[in-house]
Figure (cartoon, rainbow, N blue to C red):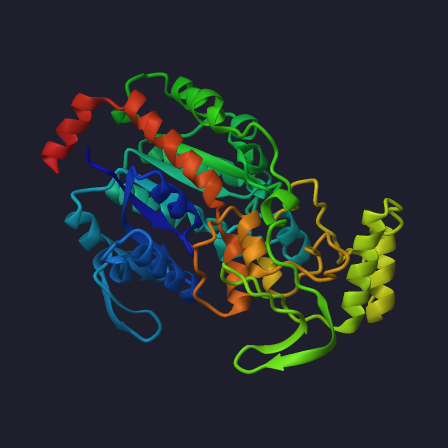
Length: 424
């Protein structure tokens, strides 16, 4: 049985394609990402885990807005180097079946709009979906998967809902998405065994001329309500379920410096997994972490109110912020949403164990995102946190990939598909 050929756009370190590869049903044709550290990690994973020999070439580090060069190739670019281009890899594999990915979400996020004085109206990232759809239009896959934050449902950068703009462009290219996005495509990944409350919009766009019913909405409803839904987990996975077996990292009486590794405020345990190394915290933060975690352990809950947390932070730092900075992960619940902000600090991801009095390690963040322990993040620690926070949890993407395969098997029109292959 031939494998399903897939292109991954805005790939990051490969959280989405990782899940697709785990099914054994897909063949990665090419990936595109414009940050260097994630590309390095992705190509390393594809080579060492999935034995993709062309991974260094087909994991393309480039700006998708330079779309003609991305298609046709580029040479000796001062920043991005050289690439044969997407057309080369698509032609080598006789076409594309599925395109996956999601443009950067900051311009659609509610938090981003609040923090930006122009409410992200002038942010070019609002329209990166247009370049995603240019790739769809060029290679005409059977379907595509478009992932983004819930904020896209309310984003209106030019006064028009972004979902209306996306739907218009999708339909113009011969594809269709679900009518009721909020009712069906807004998914909490904690329901799919991800140990994290992570709500994301997952749009499936099907190529109308290749599917077996004139009622495409019925097909899409079947996908969301039946095919994908059957992969929901039997129970919610908690933070403790996900990271409770990892070695403990305790505060040291005095910080130490380890040659080649830096300065440490906590013990560095021997571990069978990579990246389980605590970040440095000053004594002030260690004391606060311990106090906040102990408050929850004892059941007093004196310091869980946002106003109280603001007061603690402002008193400690001399600041005057209205947004509370501290949050202790509840061990019996899924984690709060893992964010790229982790690369700046871990104040909102404090370990639940008061004796450890620290924020979570890279490996703990990776587990809460559903990355397998053998996934290596090839970058400095700050970049590791950032790429993990930006990723799609592989636990969910594996189930999504299974569902996409079932959708294709159930509804694709075989005679039309054979005709298309014969022409190409």
